[in-house]
Length: 205
Image (cartoon, rainbow, N blue to C red; front, side, top):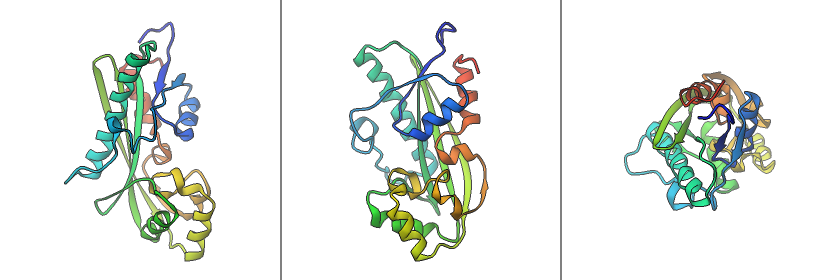
């Protein structure tokens, strides 16, 4: 990476990831895909047969970074590293992503109530012919949630674009009894792993 312009591309629509990168002083430009990554064929988020949550998160993050590099060439943008990420939940081996609608958000929150789940956030950084990935694994325990609490939270709209149907940095913070791992990873971008990976690619942090 040139030291004259230490800047990367962030291949994500997540405002949380933008805020976290800004927090640690990383300069970036947004690299947006044509549409929702769940329907974009290059970054399809369907789970493959027999795929574990860890492998799934790493594969999707790498696919997003790889597609980002292809877009740089297609759009004739200046070549810089492309950072992508994917956050998913693991509940007894079941992969849980973003809810498609309110009933699904309700089902997910009922499943998380009163128990511990894993939050997996994979990051991928691609530049030229190189791509590297890292995985942050955290554990989150929810207290028991009443039906009324779940319905009010779903009605707030906050679960709609969140992996696992909740945002720990938002109203759902009152559901959390305990976390083990990376708070920023649970939000959507593990800053420790991200900073170390950026350094490997020459970003001055």
